[in-house]
Image (cartoon, rainbow, N blue to C red; front, side, top):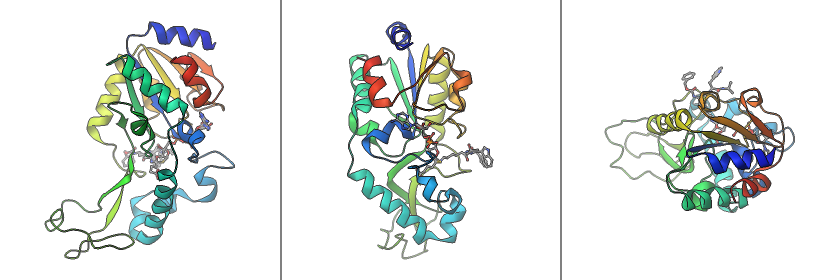
Length: 237
Ligand code: BJW
């Protein structure tokens, strides 16, 4: 089966790649839903990854993100990230990389034009926008930092549940899905929408790369059982 997918890679003029947390697992970043090691085996997402949770307990949520930021700052892209970046650089305009990951490892590996659907954990932004005084005031340090004039809080620049995805990035991702001849779906459980829906709207063939079954397997033309760091270098050499 891997030879078949490798041939699809060779033949496809336009390739879309959708990645999830499993992409970074071999860099040492925990996934969300893996039973033993996933972040949500230990933390309740409703307590942490929603605006409601942040408003209820900003320091708790800020500290959880600070802990994850510190961990991500210590890790490096793996050979799977590097294989994707090298392929895109060798074949300009042929590969569109869509990621649900907030860790920035694709960008650090050198992938151009990454469509980051769930934001970037290393950045933060104002919680309430627009606020007239904010944007001109430097935030006061704190957990979280806040505006000394109106009290507006800084929050991680990620997409929480029930929040809209960045419009332009999502539109570009939809276009890439509709126009691609091949989509590789790497390291995602396929349970979170609308990102997972991109695999279902792909015009071309869909190949899933994952060591475990996913919710998208029924939409796939090929399911390769293996990890991102072992399969991607073989497919994109
Ligand atoms: C490996 C590997 C290796 C391991 N190699 N692979 C009912 C109620 C409320 C909402 C909804 C609802 N039904 C649908 C919704 C919408 C909701 C949703 O989809 N919920 C589902 C959970 C049901 N979606 C949203 O709310 C989105 N917004 C939206 O829809 O707006 C419209 C709207 C407005 C108002 C009301 C309702 C809707 C926003 C979704 C935002 C997701 N945010 C998070 C957190 C980001 C910030 C942070 O990091 O803290 O994004 S959640 C989390 O899940 C994160 C991920 O990007 C996302 C996807 O997870 P992913 O990447 O698939 O990871 P895992 O852990 O699930 O899977 C890892 C995989 O890797 C596994 O398959 C492993 O086997 C594999 N693996 N090692 C390869 N080495």
